[in-house]
Structure formats: structure tokens, C-alpha cells
Image (cartoon, rainbow over all chains, first blue to last red; front, side):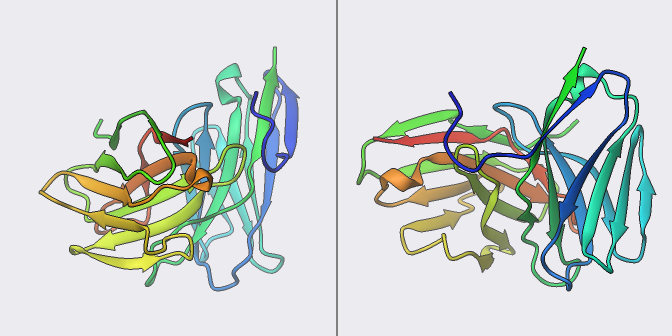
Length: 113
Length: 113
């Protein structure tokens, strides 16, 4: 089983409820932030991004909030569905210069029927 | 919808052997990346590649690693002499000229015995 490595924070919600996943980023110079979803055995899948000149951005059923003062990012998923069960990672980057993404630890979201 | 592809999906090798992981990025993308994810841990940046040269690399990307774009479509990661600790999922990603959004492939699981 997959028991090696860091223990991921977990979040369990009932199907249909809203969920909020939080992330603290490390580099105050980062100006671009992304949320990725990773299902078991697959690569990270882009969900939504936000630039540092914004504090909120909405997509389909998802909203990202950015608080630069405390270097905090959150992902809100509305009306969760079983297919939302996955590990969610935040990632930070700089629009200028280096293109590398720095990923956070990840949160495992489980949707209960 | 265009996607990043990777081969093989799973590679098993003996310690000390060379491996080459292959990726086909999205065709009009200009930036290419390799990341790795040790089982149960977060995704870690290895290297970025642009205009036929490495633009940034991490501390993980030591002399045992190399990347190449041998033709107009493939992007490869070579590990010259594999170690047990190289066992991980290796993800290729690519991004276009005007966007920071990185699209990830499904990954290659490398197992070093």
C-alpha cells in the first residue's frame, strides 16, 4: 500500500457539500499560483490559476482566493462530486524569469456518498 | 485536446543501469520540464528546458541526469547510473510561449532494484 513518505493532510466531505482546501506558500516573490488535482496514478491536472494582482478568481465550481499578506492560498470547490476525490496541490511560480513550479505538500480530498 | 504523452508508463531497472524516459510535449509548446514525485510525497522540480538548452535545474538534477530534445517532437530525461533513491514517478510537462500554465503528462514510474 501507499504508506511511505509524508502523511498528507486529509479532508473528507459529504457529496454535495462545499470544500475548502488551504495552502501556505513560501516565496513572497512568487506572483503566479496554480491549483492542481492529482488522481491516483495520474499526472497533475490544472484546475485554476491566479496572479498576484488579484485576490479572487472563479471557475466552474471552483474559486481560488489569494491572501498575499499572510501568503495563503485556498481552493473552494462547490457542490462536491465523487469525481472530485483526489490529492490537491497548490504550486507557486514567478511570471518573470524562472519557470519552475514549487509544489506544496498536497491535501487528500475524499468525497463521501 | 492536445496532451503530453510519456513512455514507458513503468520502467524497472537494476541499480547502476542507465535509463531514458521519453516525453512528447504538446506540439506548439516551447518550454519543457521534468518533475519527479517520490511515492507519497510532493512533486519536485528537476529541470526546465527552453530554446534547446537548460534554463534552470534543481539540486536534485546532478551530473547523473541529462535532458535532450533529439528531434522536433521528443524530450528525454536520461539517468546515467541509477540509484535506489531514483525510484519515483517522473512527470514531463510543457507550456506555451505566453502562458505559465504547465500541462503534465501521465508520468513514468521508475523502479530501481
